[in-house]
Each structure stands twice: as structure tokens, then as C-alpha cells.
Image (cartoon, rainbow, N blue to C red):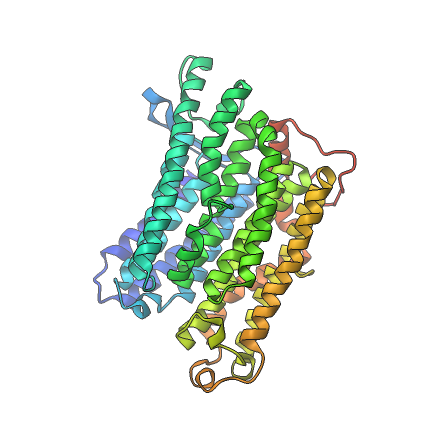
Length: 508
């Protein structure tokens, strides 16, 4: 019951906050933070209870839900999903503290509604990372769209309605492709087993013919590629992040988008191994294109929130690249990258939100000379930015290096081209720092931009601390992730080539 309880904590919190009188804004924030911290404690206990010698599902619980259709409430975690749950459980209270005044500043909606939606979103996030019945996964996959839709559409910027609807439509179309593939997979399992099932472990043991695998694979992949987001299915992301509050953007890009890459790793490779190998060369090309496309467009942005969104498209290219080279280093690097990206991009969105709320503008040209008036805030921005460009000593460097090492072992050309994307990352981050932080501050900057507050620093400090700590002791995360990576390789039936770079703590 551990995983179900882990979902019940934020669910109860969301209901309690929603039922509060609208005038009790401060109480709503305090209760939301309390339930978010309780969820974090539960997620840490979940990870501490894992057996790191096993890469299979743990903390498994299964109950019949709709037995006539082979649907069950089946939950379980491995090292990869457990790490992502902890990441989400850390970011939710970070967002609550950082966005303490977001609802009031938006001038729309109620404070209790804003924080109730965040807790409801956390319920579905935990559900989607723990569901091991594919129908249940689909339910959570679709359900988590609606809290984000209302967080953007109700509390976002001037173009919030357009951005929220575009996000919802893209996601729903992707979900329809998944639903079609899900029905097809149920029919296939019925033919092979005599009774249809959505059970993950059972589906990994099916002997699906290659042609059917390819068709079903494409349905799931399209949904995951939209969610990730990968080029060319990415266009909803810049609009959504530009209009959402910084906290909503943190959860959207830092957590929800990981569902796409998690789905590729946890479902596509084990259930459709032959199709995964068949489409891998094409997907690797798309991943490399995403790396360059995202970085190139980030360089040319004038809106700071859109810039961070495009950097994430580039980062997701690295994650997908590591997944589909299917080496232990690539898979470990991608899994670790998902965690690191959540913290580094989350920190970057939040610090940008701090700056935008002070200056009242998202235009990069409206800043300049911030380091003169807010040196600590500038330092926080620099740390967040350096993590985004994978500076050695930060956790993002380890994950990016593992992805490139794992890629080079099987596709040196893709690895070399992708490495050039790191150079472009340095360009967009350092140029952004130069334009916003250096120089002589304008009168408007001097009058509006103030030093980071204690609350803001407390909010962003955990993300920065984790980025630095995992940069020096990545084994803390990799020792949890690697057994699950080994299990994925076993499902797919691949082993590392003899030329693979062997790195202690990065997988077998």
C-alpha cells in the first residue's frame, strides 16, 4: 500500500485546500506546503526501501479493477521511476515556496485553487511513474493534462487561453494515438494468451511479430514524442512556458515532460524490442536534430521564458539519444539526465521568474547590469545557467558525458555531432548572462530589480544543492538507477559492444 498511500497524501491535501474558504489564502499555502513535504518524506522512505541489487519492480501492489477487460490497479517502481518520483516530490514544495505570491500576482483565480491544482498534479505525476498496468498508465497520462491546463489557462499571462488550448490539443491528439495502440496491444495479448491484459510484466513476455510491433510502437512513440517534446512535435512547449507562471513551467518541463522519455525507456524498449531496434536509427537522427534545433532557436530568442523552453528541447534530444543507442552508459546517462534536467531547468525557470516579476518584462533587452544591483541573485542565475550548459562539477555534466560515451560506442558520428550541441549551449547561456547581468544598469533596472529575498533563496537552494552534490557523488543516484537499466537491456536483448567505455557507477 506504500505507493497508493504516496498518492493519497497529495490527493487529501488537494481536497482539503480546495474546501477552504477563499479568504484563507495563507492557510491554503501552509497546508499545501505541509502535504507536499509529507509526500517528499514518503518518497524518500520508498527509495530507502528499494533493494539496489534488483532491477525489477518493487513495492508492487496489485488489485483487480475491471477484471472483465484485464485491467488492474497495479503499481510498482524500479530505480528509474523511483528517482523521478523523488525529483518530483522535491520540486513540488520548491515550486510552492517559490510561487508563494504567484496566484495573487496573476490577478485571476483563487489562491486555494492554484495550490489545490498543484497538489492534484502531484497525484497524477506519482501515478504515471508507478502505474504498471498500461490502461492505468493511460488514465494518469491523460488526467495530468487537466491540472496543467487550468494552471496555464487560469493563472497564466495575456495569451494564456491560446497556450493552454494548444498544449491540451497536442497532448490529446498524442493520447489518441496511444489509445489506438493500447487497444491493438490488448487484442494481440488476447490472441496469444486467450485473455487480453494490460499488465506490464506480462506484456514484456509476449512474442509479438515484428510487423505488428512496428505499428504499435509508432502509436506509443508519437504520444511520448509529443510529451517529451521532440522535434517536430515540440511547438506547443515555447507558448506554454511563455504564458505559464514560473512554477507551472518548472513542473511542466522539469517533471511532466519526463513522462515522454520515461515511457520510451520503461514501455517501448521492453514491450517492443524489435521495433525499438528497427526505428532506433531514425529516432537517433531526430534526437540529434532536436539538440541542434533547440540550441539554435534558444540563441535567437528575445523572451527569456521561451529561451529556457528551447534549451529544454535541446536537452531532451540528449535524453532520447541515450535511450535509443541502448548501451548501459547511454541508458544510465539518459535516466540520470532526466533527474538532473528537472533540477537545473527548474532552477533556471524560477530564477527567471524572480527577475521577470521584478522588472515586469520577459524581454532580454529590458535587462542589463543586474549584477550591480542584485549580486546574489546574479550568482544564483549563473549557477543555474552553468548547470544548463553541463559545466564539469555539476550533475548535468555526468549525465551528458555518459550519454555521449554510450553513443560513441555504437554511433561515433552521432556522438561527435551531438557534442557540438554542447558548444551551442555555452553560447546561449553565456550570451544570456552577458546581456542580462553585465554592463551598466538602466534607470528602470535600478528602480525595479531588487536582491533575492530569503524566501526565494530558500526555495531555489535545494535544487542548486542537489545539482552540485550529485556532480561530485553521482553514485547516490546511479546506484539506484543502474539495476533498472540492466533490466531494460535484458528485456531488449542487447549488450554493450566491446568498444564501450566502462565507467564505474554508470552501469554494467
